[in-house]
Length: 217
Ligand SMILES: *[C@@H]1O[C@H](CO)[C@@H](O)[C@H](O)[C@H]1NC(C)=O
Ligand SMILES: *[C@@H]1O[C@H](CO)[C@@H](O)[C@H](O)[C@H]1NC(C)=O
Ligand SMILES: *[C@@H]1O[C@H](CO)[C@@H](O)[C@H](O)[C@H]1NC(C)=O
Ligand SMILES: *[C@@H]1O[C@H](CO)[C@@H](O)[C@H](O)[C@H]1NC(C)=O
Ligand SMILES: *[C@@H]1O[C@H](CO)[C@@H](O)[C@H](O)[C@H]1NC(C)=O
Ligand SMILES: *[C@@H]1O[C@H](CO)[C@@H](O)[C@H](O)[C@H]1NC(C)=O
Image (tube, rainbow, N blue to C red):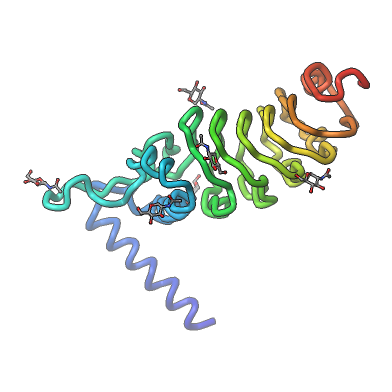
């Protein structure tokens, strides 16, 4: 306990020192944890995708000059909120191949918009998606995702837009998603989902209209 408190104090002092030494770069330190987490995911992607994401680097553009290191806020497809924390990731139509297995859900709590539509992402959507608790916009449509849609998406209370169309999801549609109060738009068509959405409200019209089971509904 004592040691823990001491360590916290020490890192606070360090942070304050760091912040004052680098007062012109307040955002660089704020997002370094996010940056490292995003880079870990980048390294899990296929080589070709990594070259698409060549701006995702902490190396200075030129090691011999004294320009500040780049942070995620300036990276391709990424934008930050006023606090310098990653808020949006838009990799739509970027030819990205890989999975979400290494995606840093826990390290990006301020993400509000994730647009990965029209890529070559595969694998399952990990249940850890629920850590993105501020998510408003989620578009994974037109990829190669498979498996069941995790009911944990139903924990994303602020979700307004959910596009999962044109993948290979199977199993039943999680009823939890039907209970999301803010959801305005839901696209699920062209998957292998079975069953029907219970508690269908207006938002479910799209599912009914374009869903694989439209005839039965
Ligand atoms: C990716 O590139 C590295 C070297 O840059 C190589 O060793 C590795 O085999 C490549 N991986 C694939 C899947 O092509
Ligand atoms: C960095 O910039 C200097 C001069 O501006 C140049 O001579 C050098 O080749 C550059 N290094 C890299 C790695 O681009
Ligand atoms: C998320 O944003 C809040 C401010 O809204 C900030 O205090 C917090 O440090 C941010 N989280 C991360 C991981 O950057
Ligand atoms: C992502 O970028 C594309 C292309 O610029 C744009 O059409 C789309 O609206 C963006 N998505 C979000 C969630 O802003
Ligand atoms: C799509 O990803 C798969 C691996 O999941 C890979 O084998 C394939 O080459 C990728 N296709 C393209 C067009 O990049
Ligand atoms: C989903 O498809 C996989 C094969 O791709 C299969 O193993 C699994 O049993 C299917 N799950 C359901 C619920 O249909």
